[in-house]
Image (cartoon, rainbow, N blue to C red; front, top):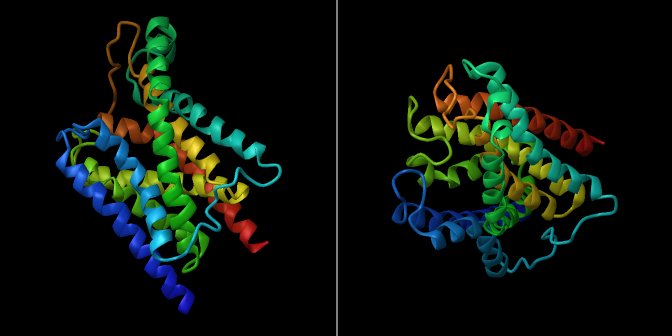
Length: 285
């Protein structure tokens, strides 16, 4: 019982430190369109989960043992491989779903990705140029959510529940940006509540994948690496498939909100379910 009380205290301290600065910066520097008017605020925003971990560990005298800061157990290479392959494959699978189910006319071969090499090179350069910021974001968030919050929640509940709760907390942490259209825009019914629900679903299944990587390697770096690559490539690569050779967007059977969900979520959900099952089976064994 005493251990659970200590875990609850540490979780509470961590969440206050992770949430409060983000909500203040998120509203103060919001451009009211889903972005931020300050680049510095944008970088700091994604670092606060890691900053909150450091402060929490010091204040609660927990120290940094079991902080998942090593590079992994033996035979962790395949998990690093999965961490890289998954976010690279995701936008291409999403593009196939997009053109099979949502685009009214035209085909994937007419998209800017295949038809315009200049556009392809430009988008990929933009993705790589944002790599440093994305690296900070990925490590900053994963040190907080996967390397600290989820293990703490596992002291209070089963792993599957801890993954779900972390996903919900992670999603709601984006609240100030979601209010103004972050990720899902503003042109959909039930704005912004639909965006919150979509973000919760996405974060739960991504939380399962990142937690699986962290547990299998006993390291935060595979999850951070995968998070970084996903942030770098998903939007930039997937957007290439949303326009034809003339640079005009394809006509969709639905609005862009549902286009994103129908195209991008299936692979996330399937992968998340598989990782959840694998973690539960491992725990039972």
